[in-house]
Amino acid sequence: MNAATGPLRPTSGQLALAQLLAEGGRKREVGITHVDALAYTDPARHVAEQARIFARAPLVIGPSALVAEAGTAVPHDGFGKPLLVTRDRHGEAHVFLNVCRHRGTRLVEGTEPVCSPRLVCPYHAWSYSLDGQLVGLPRPDAFPGIDKEALALKRLPTREAGGLIWFAFDEAASFVEADALGQDFDAFGLRDMHLFRRRTHDVAGNWKLVMDAFLESYHVARLHAQTIGRFFKDGVASADTIGPHQRSAVAREIDEAAVRAGDWPTLRSAITYTYQMFPGTVLIVSPDYVNLMVLMPQAHDRVLVEDFMLIPEPPATDKARHHWEKSWNLLDGGVFASEDFRAAALAQQGLASGALDRVTLGTLEAGIRQFHDQVERHL
Ligand code: FES
Ligand SMILES: [Fe+2]
Image 1: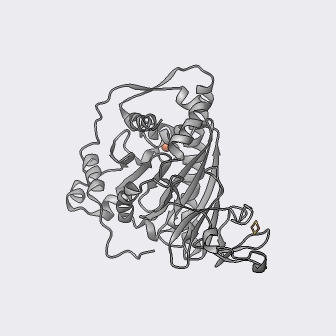
Image 2 (image 1 turned 90 degrees about the horizontal axis):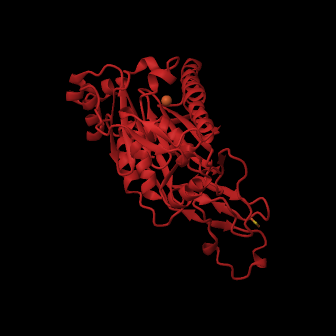
Image 3 (image 1 turned 60 degrees about the vertical axis):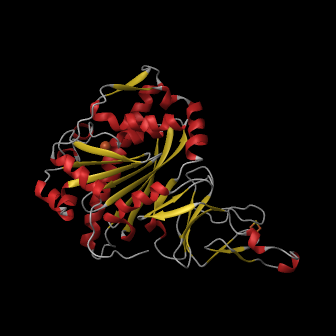
């Protein structure tokens, strides 16, 4: 991974959102709109979304820090196929199918990172390097003329940009927008951050209900009244798009002089930037740490959400560890699990009853409108 060079600077897009906040936020002109309840409750929709969106689009699998060290491999099962994220000895990140090329055995078990220069299949001990090459097999005399190169692990298109690792099931997927977003994430120094904690939540709600919760600020003063609500001005937000992705910002008091001067440390201390990456990734940049959420739909009414918390550097003291622990508990356990994800599960319960044909969106929920338009466009 590259070391940061010089002080971090905002991108023009990040500054433009700060400017809009200083002017009192963006007034969206969309008016009231609706989303069909079936978008959340129909099992056929889930199947179609899997085939037309998740099987095709570039997906974030995790932060670069998931495989911080060369020689690390992490099994990953949330997207319906056994995957393996690795960083090879040259520092390159890969996403492979976690499947031995001999007779198809799952190569690495469990879900925890493994640090090893070789991955050895538990069945007959074929071994692979972390760039996927088949490097050894016992009793090679039993495989006369074998072409080892043709039996490398199956690699999926992979791209690392701005501190995130993206992959796609579709060989034709383009990572142009992953690179564009990477410029914004470099402004936060994301690629050099340390993975403090990760946890997978099993949420009994449609994945889009979870995305919806991160696409509007209308609920913040209400649902989050006991946690983070007081940190933000009610309903004051700014947002724009990068390809199919959205970028938004909410803030405490904004210093207009800091916007004019492009004073990034001052702006960062006041603004929370959030990136809603299509289809199902959310990156929330708090002033001093970052949460990345990767949504992995399992059914029309169930989604796994892996939450990663990234901090500037490994905690050096107990005091520092305690400080980050508190932030982790506040966001992961409090704001997300007990508030946003709970709201998604409650919405699923209500919508599944058939009481509503459609949900109603106001002008503070225009981000949800854009997201669902994007989903529809792909179906
Ligand atoms: S199945 Fe992996 S070595 Fe035989
Ligand atoms: Fe929320």
